[in-house]
Image (cartoon, helix red, strand yellow):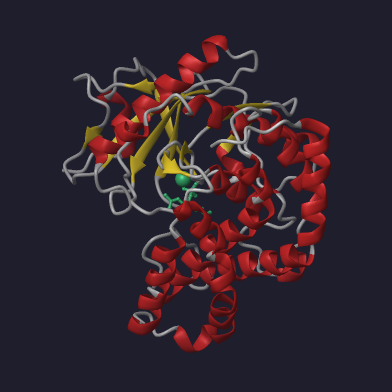
Length: 369
Ligand code: GN1
Ligand code: MG
């Protein structure tokens, strides 16, 4: 028998007496619910998407390790972020499995916070850069060997491009004919986009334990506009700071929503790029190398490209990975990413000028990774 989600809090050691459970419309992967008591949100309940995260034990061990590292870091860091806590099950486990083999977990709720979908203010972008910068710094104490790569090759362009090629040849949803323009876009940029992956392979860009899903709405802000927490820790794995930087810019510096159907609204806001980069570099000083910072503009394009390719691949496969609300949703998302790349290409020179300006203003780099 399936347990209705309203009854799930009783499985956790949360003393959730008189609770209400409300679904939250966030994220493309997991199902998330708010658990309220006396009208106040107290906990976050999540059903983990087990098609995406196949090894729940490894996922939850990673999460525990990351939360511990963050907690430890915040003890001495002058700049603080709130660290969520995992709520154990009544049996002391890290997650609860229902009769249908769905895995559920619970976190404490970050009170008084909000997420931001489209970033319009310079100080919000700076705060976001600061929070993801602190997060990277905090994770530098985590031994990469102890983290299980729960989604191997997560940001490998080679792998994502291979999956795209396979989707094209299988044509499962019979949609290939509709997307000729998008396919041409992907093909025309692929070679250039391999530059950063090649630098990583050669060792010129160091491997680090990173967040890997730094979409701007994975940050929590106070009502005053301070970034107070970094959420969505599922993809923390070895990777590159360029992934985190690029993914954050892809989402923050886009003036439109990720699924805006009118692509004329999609613009790249260079002042948001500058503010985020300033916040990120200020809070990773002494950690990042100059080679990393020099590749920030390209990283923004690479991550936008990788995620655009993933949306298009999922569209071709018949929408089996991302949650969608209507049949063209993934195609709309892919088009937004590709339009944003066109915008970034036009402003590539300006992005480099901005980086020079920030570097002279701020930094002395480590010359060694
Ligand atoms: C997914 O769960 P959410 O919405 O934060 C995806 C990211 C993509 C993002 C695109 C595990 O993140 O990689 O960048 O959608 N997460 C996973 O919006 O695939
Ligand atoms: Mg996520």
